[in-house]
Image (cartoon, rainbow over all chains, first blue to last red; front, side, top):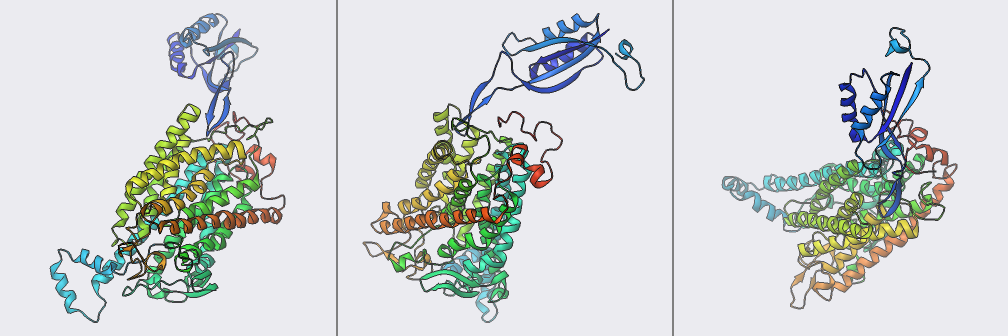
Length: 113
Length: 516
């Protein structure tokens, strides 16, 4: 059974999260630059005298595939590394992966990790 | 009229050159029939100054391109950059073939004893005569007349070409992100062939505005050293009428009518563009002495930097006070506002006056940008109206206030002052140069001449450019504005067929750009 752990974090926390995942020997991760809003909401700025809303804030999305057994450890590792205790730290969620293939070898599911 | 050679310039330059070259001087004294090598040297040194100046002004195009492109969204960057390059291609072609002939073709200033190529007319008046000339003719595509005899006409043409290009590129900023490229091409041709040369002939070409000192006894006539009016306000009023005819960008004004900020995609690029413009401005202003023998160019250069500094500083402080933050885009506009405002008076004012002119320019630009954006509701993405139109006018008027009367005495020979006006005498009977109201009662005449120039720019040039854009609406199927769907998607692909940033995601549809 393979899970996908998805975390949306503050961009400047990416290095720490990456290093923490490496420290627990996670073999891989995928990173994306994203924008969004949550409880932190947006704010208003002024450009050339006219206001505009910045309601989509830049975040980094981290995706890690891991076994069911490793899932809690991965979630805790990301949470501890990404936390600043201030609003806007982001969220982590876990989704089950129904099928997974390593393209080069054709290995399936747990073997493909 | 641009500053033409002083009667004593040759003697002055020769003296400079000869200082410390005693043996060469002996050679000169024995030469009578052959061209005087020192006269040739001084003339060619002056010519080199013009070519250096023209190169600097031409480099301002890079500044305009980066400033304007930085201030617009990534989805239109290829379109805006293309306009800034094509404006030279179109405008310069038209100016070369037709525009220069209309602006200077029949213009001749008699400078005694100085065989300075551009003083020779290539033709004669096309409209008007004497002190009331409205257009010249001759020298089409730089042919005919005495052109072949001297490189000076070519150098002067090149310098004037670069100024024309500056005026032509101003509307590309205010009309950015929604201007159909076909319509823009027509503007470039129109500006280079007719629009710019018209006001140019009336002023620097020795036409009727420059002769108001002789005809109506108004100071030295309309005086504009390097073009606050001729280049910036004339280009700026077209930026105003063009943006008015086009209408605001989709999403600029909400349903409540409130102006929304649409941040530019690269403040870094715009900042570099601002500094390139600043650098090029030394060619714009200082080289407008047209001769290195006239050491006033150093005063001009210093005044230019002082006005830029004060303009940038008050622009920054004023926007900080108004909005709570020192908006980088408005610091840039403030600096440029100081530069535009000092361009007309730079040779005629003391450094303290240059500072004051810049200081006021910085406040004017912030207030005009906010007023145009929020009250008049003309959408000007780059602030061209506040920088070039409003401060071009301020610069022209400032000359009539602060000109200290020391520069331009007998500019065209004994008894002939700036613009060929009969030299004015002060109460003590001494000859004076261009004088503003703070330096003598004759200054009121000068200020009146400047005000007439401003009125002509606003009413006549504003009217012509407005009519041009209105007529263009009929010329092009669907008008001069891009299709709404193309505007929302970004003009790069629909108009130009290429993205400015194909390897970046999220630029084409303008992610987060708050456009519905």
